[in-house]
Image (tube, rainbow, N blue to C red; front, side):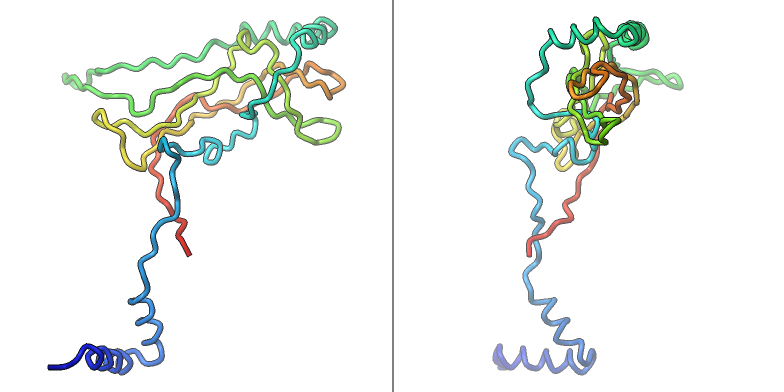
Amino acid sequence: MISGCLLVLLLCQTVTAFFGGGAFDMFKLMTQPVQEPACIWDLDHRVPEATPLGHKDICLDNLPLYSQTNIDRALAKDRFARSFFQTLKRLYQPMNQTYFSQVSYGGQVFDYEDMCPVNPRLVERVNVPNPRTGAIDICNIVNPYEQNIYRAECGMNCQMNGQSAVNHFCVPDGYIERYALVFCPSSLSQCRPARIKIPVGCSCKKYTCLKYLN
């Protein structure tokens, strides 16, 4: 009976005869442990929403809001800002996303479920470039409830057949650009228009971990 060590030696000689100098590299590749993905989801199986979406216009930091008294005072002194504010209130409507559980097509009725429900969140702070310095200012949305500026918050697993799908996550999508009146204390004109980009829907994405342990 051939011993284990002798069998390994014969195997190495056979591989070397076929593959030459690359045999050692191949043998090393075959014997090394299989790499395991190092990506770790959060405890609640969420993915960072800001990472794939680039919330560069929306300030998600939990910062205190500026004084409403200062905002009202600046708005009262700026006739253009007041006119612009009234226009925005008439122009934009609150975000509303309605889902139906059945749809008819071709004489048939289909049931379907929403995989990624939307949780509207009021946008209160935004990042706005300073026109004089080029730096990014954290500005408040002037009276956000009246301007109807909402973003879609998702952050959950996609729901398939009533169960959460593994590695399938709902992320904000369906970006729109709109104008808003913002209050920036460091600007010469404290109340000024800003164009911001916000997500209004959620879509299901499959995440595959591409980072491996060394």
